[in-house]
Image (cartoon, rainbow, N blue to C red):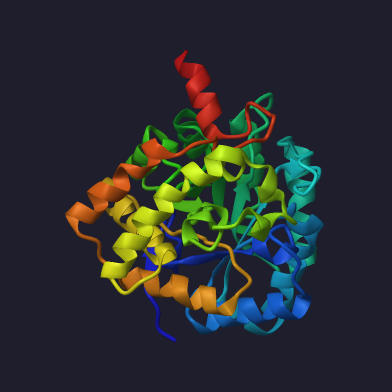
Length: 338
């Protein structure tokens, strides 16, 4: 079907909305392979053809699942994957690894799991700050003429890191957490991406499900890793429901859902910055994929945007609870400002 598209950087055009494939690994609760394949195929049917995965998701199982669909529908898909993290998401033992030799090793492993010849967008997933980013991106850049990769991306980088990388090779997209309750990227990274002509791919645009309004009871996510996040725990859980209340009120006026309003806010935030923005909400539910795709047609008023803009100041808890201080661009930028 015809669906809206967006031009990111380096000439890469993708669907206006993407699908984050970490949700297809059980990290947000158990799912079956049949359900995961059904979700991916439904996304493609709806024109959500920008599929985002990573080698760390499900220890490679997410890539294998995406590859299963690519056997018959590769021409419809823009496949993005990531490297640069070792360890386990479920056990929170992840660490960054960025050496050039590992980049060359990781891409071949991803291509094998995906069962494809070329990755459309290849991201550095996290920064190992001991390795100059120019070295890592230089190794990634060599994968382009080798035919293994079409475009390069970076995840959770600072504005300075983005500039340094972009001088080595054009960067098509930056991926970082960005939503109505996580807005630190607007301080420096997003404006720099806009100036350089780099697209932005927000992950967790629905706050790991919190902004959908479906998580009113902590028991809902007691069996997955969100239970240990500070925004989902204790008093913060109740405090952060005020964000959902505001989204729900605006959604009612649009005959929409809180998730759709949260996505519509992101589209508007990109427009205000002159930045191409393509969120990648993750879900394994076909009905939620359809719901999210419909958000591309919602236009918020100036007053509604003003209300939503003020919500992040009310949020309790950190956006990342991982114990590595270099895990997010925000922590490195704040440290540099001191």
